[in-house]
Amino acid sequence: MQISSRFTVALHIFACAETFKDKYKVTSDFLAASINTNPVIIRKILIQLKNAGLVTVARGTGGITVKKPLGDITFYDVYQAIEPVENGDLFRFHEAPNPDCPVGRNIHALLDGKLKAIQNAMEDEMRRYTLADIQADLSEILAEEDGQKAEKETSR
Image 1 (cartoon, rainbow, N blue to C red):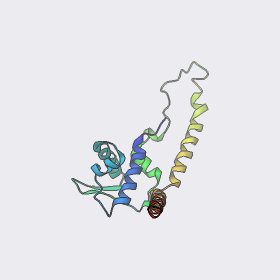
Image 2 (cartoon, rainbow, N blue to C red):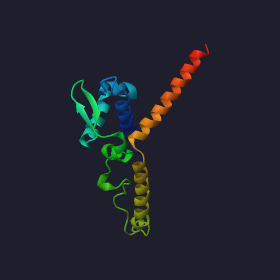
Image 3 (cartoon, rainbow, N blue to C red):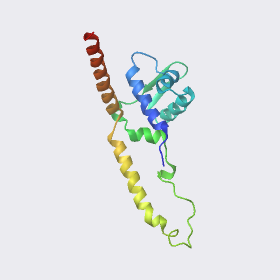
Image 4 (cartoon, rainbow, N blue to C red):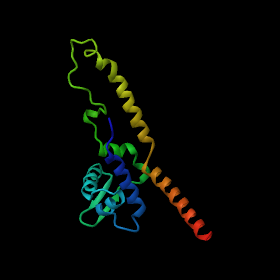
């Protein structure tokens, strides 16, 4: 099991949208340059985010806008928009274990509850983090970088 990179790309999109919203039009081309990927991939992810009600997308060079306050959008919300799980189950079970085998006929009883508990724990943890957390951390990092840059300039 692996969550695709679309999830982290979506988080990157939100960080860019917030960071650059007052300076640039945040378009798929702009985002693709920051993420270092093809704009088509960005457009596909933006469609998923739009369909989930998380962003608005102005066609052409209009750019994107986040529809809710960042503190109201959790990692789980983004995950649900980008990585919808089949039938609500993160773990996909092999189709037809052999009912004549003692392991095969009992494997669901052995694993179903445990796998559901693992999924619930991951989803609960994702609900703890919001896009505002990313933005706060980014602001701190950028302020630190600015301080280091200023320190280098004064030491010359």
